[in-house]
Length: 162
Figure 1 (spheres, rainbow, N blue to C red):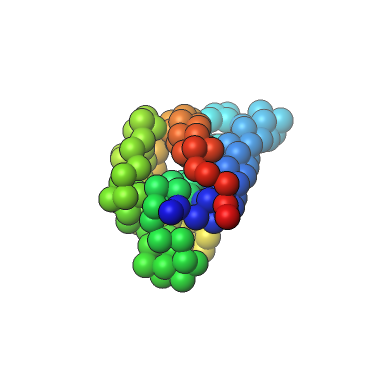
Figure 2 (cartoon, rainbow, N blue to C red):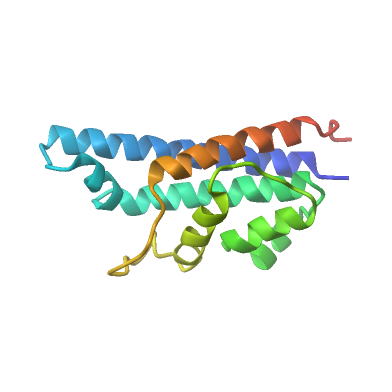
């Protein structure tokens, strides 16, 4: 039986990081406008706050997908989630699908494909390569909204913990 408590905890953390990433992106645009930076959207995508924005969005994806994995019957042991799946977004999504999780989140495969390696290598925390193809933040947020709703419904369909 899926571990609802673990899935719920992962979901809540994933949701918080996703919302925070979206909020930071919006604030970066506001900051650029206040500072009269010529292209606020470009600044938000590639400026001072962009690494933190992508880190938060990546963390949101990681935890929401792990919540889906656990809620779909995947192993809920913390050691397994940290060591066997780790910060690999691609592996997390594959593992969730392997236990039956299906998602209609738009462009999720491409988003995960783009973010997986830099996220796993901690580029958003420690280093910024000179070039890195990244998805557009509003598209990531759109996918996260759908993923959030799907995972919330999946967890809601589980029975109460014994």
